[in-house]
Length: 338
Ligand code: ASP
Image 1: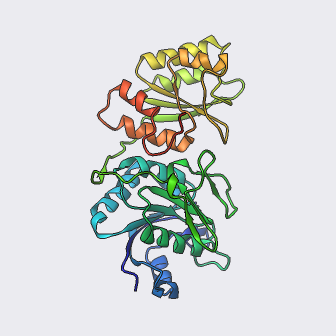
Image 2: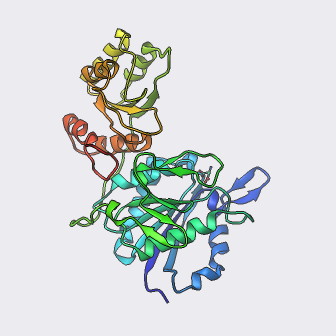
Image 3: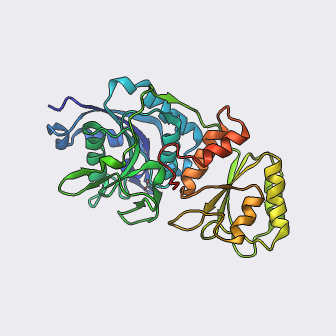
């Protein structure tokens, strides 16, 4: 019998859903009952498991920062008793949750693996079986001191991952950072890529409901519309720009709206619309114009990591200058800066 112990937080998602007249729905008790009969759980390779099924199981499109806080509190309250943690979650917003948890769980020394599936466990061609079983083995049997996202034979750093396929089994990718583990006939952990184990004990930092928005540029983008958004009480804007972080430098109204927002204390982060690569605001005049307007470089962070990191920093006691500075620093492996 394996003496490792894994705590499973089951929040909802396709993985445990059952068919109904209106399509797949989560139902309390259904999934726990199904997996309790699984013979694999008797294997000596399998850690001992305790599953906490959340009272209200959700489709992850309904996830809020309150749920993120609930998951992190759940992990914190059982932290000393278990070797690792698995969060079962819907795939739609999984990259947001994995990113948020990576920031909220400060000084994390044990694996927290977020996973789910594209086809429910109950269905014939399900991908849930491997995703669940391998996640449990990763969480129980390996030293991975960070939040990972396991899906279809790959373990990714949570805050580097993105959902890029709505229906394929290879639904997640990590465009700007290699996978932390590749799973084939063997589980190969890339130890040199893992975060270092922290010396301090785990602490959690709540993310307050964010006053943060993501807006994407497009040809014909209306700066007056942006001004209306910025005239509310928002604290942060993730601006999805072109290529290496470029925006229309000829549109003086657009640049002055951004300057005004920045002067009024809104933190504006430059995040590229490109799937891969990094923002470099000094590469083109069109990027430099944003720098002059007070916009902060988001480097190669995913939009999910940028949004959750900004919300996390704005929820702490930091000054505006400190928030801007930390947005450009590598806090949990979410950003590459040469
Ligand atoms: N809509 C589902 C969810 O995100 C999709 C899934 O789990 O794959 O909860």
